Length: 191
Image (cartoon, rainbow, N blue to C red; front, top):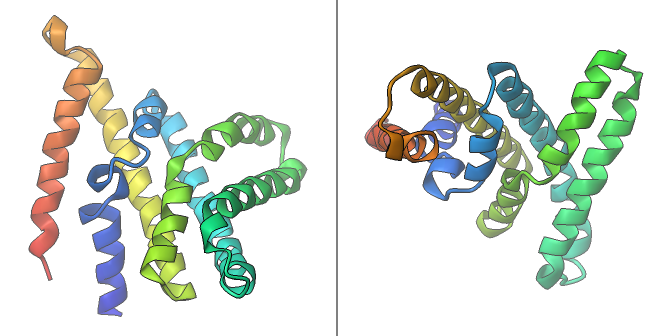
């Protein structure tokens, strides 16, 4: 149990894909305009990771590896992510109309989110078990949501303060993100 909690903590905070590999940084900056938008994008990312990763795991172990098609894995993963996300969107049309409209506006944002593909490619490189892959994917989504909320709060504080003209908006946001990243990496030695 301690190992699982350690993995969750490590992936969500210390080894956050956005901070360590700069995967999805453009998504973070674009989606951090308003707090409710940030929550929606973050929760939708967690949901998509939770439904795409089992499909990717099964596809990898039933088709890609037995047929030795590892050189086509990127193409297969992209097609599978698109198929699963659009299929889940069709199933969500039974929800109230207000929620449907929010989901319909989020689908293109989620499809271009590189976090989904990065976790799928890291899974293949690390050779995770199914349970470990699910835990890794969900904790990556939690880390993505956490960082998105922090960036949204930072952006609100930056807009309300008097920042020198050359540092307004993106430069000060990237500087603050770098300092925040160093602070989280200081947690790397905790056991």
